[in-house]
Structure formats: C-alpha cells, structure tokens
Length: 275
Image 1 (tube, rainbow, N blue to C red):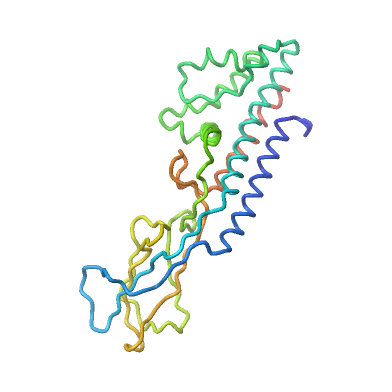
Image 2 (image 1 turned 90 degrees about the vertical axis):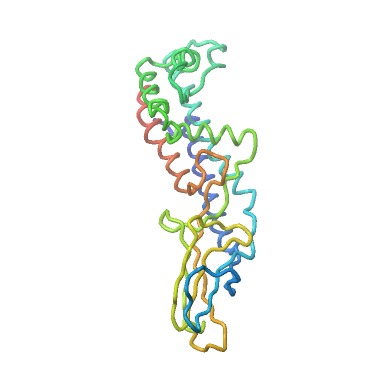
C-alpha cells in the first residue's frame, strides 16, 4: 500500500500534531505554571499535637492558564484521525465500486455507532459501496458492541472529541499532579529547612491545582524551635483532559497516542487488503 493515500496522510498529520503537542506541553511545564507555598497551617487537623510541633501546609498560590495552542493541537489531532477514517471509507468504496455516483460519494463516511439499532439502515448510505466483507469488518469495530461501555471505545472517543471540538475548543489542557497514573504530592528535605522530624503528612483525597487549593497538611519538629521550618514541594505535572468530556482526567499524550495507534493498527491495517 502506498503512502500517498489520503487516509495515510491524515494519520501522519495527526501524529505531527501530537508531536507538536508533546513539545509545547513540555515547554509549558518547564515554566513552572503553578506556585506552591509552604506556610503555617491556620486550620490544623483535629488530632493531638506534641510539644514543640509546628503545623504547616502546602498551598497553591499561583496558577497559570495553559496556552490555548495546546487545546487547538489536540483538536487538530482528533480531527485528522476522524478525517483519516472517512478518507479510508471513501477509498474502499472507490476501489469496490468504481462507477459510484456523486450522490453515493456525498454520503460516504466511516460509521461510528454507540447503538446498533439504526446501524444497518444508516450504513447502507455510508459504506454501501464497500466490499461486503469489509463492511462486516467495519461492523465488528463498532463501539456499540461494548454495550454501556461504548464510551471507552477508541472510535467513540475520536468521534466525541471531534464533535466537541467542532462546536467549541476542547478544554483539554489542564495540569494534574500525576505520577505513574496516580495523583500524588510529595516533599523534599535537603538539609537546610530546619526540619528535625516529621510528625504527620496528609494529602487530601482529591488533589487539585486550583488557586488556594491545599495540597498537603503536615507537622514536624524543628531542629531550632525559635525558627520556622519548611519543605520543598514535589509535584509532578501531566497534561490531562479537563472536565466536560468523556475522557476527563485522562492524560492527553498517552490517550492520543493510543488513538493514533488504534486507527493505524486496528482499522487501516486490516482494511487495507480491500484496496
């Protein structure tokens, strides 16, 4: 199969947008878009505190909005993935039905269905000019086969993210404190912080990086009781899809990569034999 097919070029373009996103996201994170201050805790936890123990907290005191370009790049990536699917459907129909009419061409589209009830009738227009065996393969790929879990299907995620981006910019780019897929906040003690020992360190159940959010409440004993102690916050950042989509909280880069790979390996690869 040549590399000059429209669907191949569209897939390559999606990967280019993903690569640009990775570069720009890393550059934004390097600017340290969130400020975190270690300060005395005015509302300490309701538990016994020993003599000489200082109670403190880590609080977000600066929030920088992510560049709109990151959202645009995500939208461009999913648009090109959706377009690659449609270009593939068109190429398959053109191969099997060389004399298809302009009316048939106008309704050509790669079907993506969350419900199988209307699938046969709708797809007669969308892929009716494609090899019947290829039609069966496309049907087998449909999200509706997952039942109520259709939203977890890569094709539905492409469809829905592209639909959202058509009407408004995807609010895809917010940073969450994630390490190895788990929200986390840590602290580092380098030796000059006057910390003699840690009494407790408690992180809230849902860590958010909003202005004035409390990331940790902690207490310890200072080496010099006449001075305050402090720690260096350790907050890993990863760009995730923000609230309002079916993939809220999912890290953007791994998800987009998996969607690109799915289109390439699970859709284009098996259907290319019908070209």
